[in-house]
Length: 218
Image 1: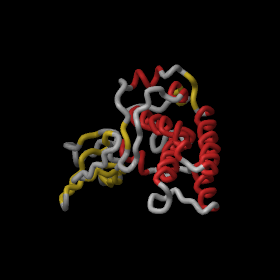
Image 2 (image 1 turned 90 degrees about the vertical axis):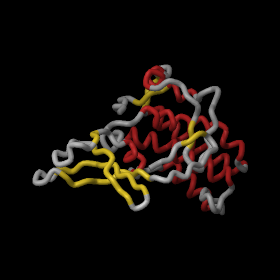
Image 3 (image 1 turned 120 degrees about the vertical axis):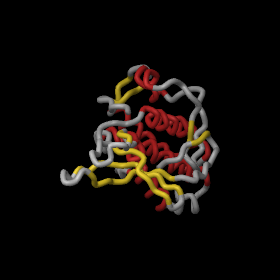
Image 4 (image 1 turned 60 degrees about the vertical axis):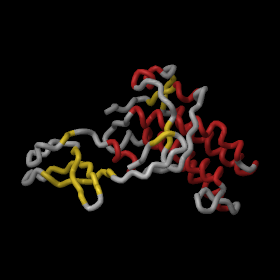
């Protein structure tokens, strides 16, 4: 599960929550996703996506964490990383510079949004509005990320970013930001552990676009 905190903070939660697959409802053979909470050696099912007759006390809810576990293709980011490797550079945190790792990782996070849109919002055609806003915050960071890179790396990075932006525009329509504003009130930017995503006073113009068709929001 992705942790969340204010920009710059790296939380170390004591408990981990992760989506699991649960077989229940025998003899019907019902299969549904379940959220499993772990606290040391203690484990318990916190929620399920479908009602389980044998466990009626469980909360039935969409489990947002599962979205982050789905592997999707990131072709433009992959080409950028291949270019880096071919030129003796790296986007790995332990090998590259901090700026290169930050740029490559955030580039991939931004491309995942278009990959999700193009794949029909797996696993079940829905996507939380706050996840979408977080993706746009990654794009805000990328607006100035090239300034911290060496010129040749910046050129390759800019090419990859332009390709991702092009795909995003093809999958969205400009609604002036109405859909996202209606779904969520403004708030400070957030970042994942290890990623620094600074709040942007002026959003990228891409923030005025919404997916078409739009996913359901839980």
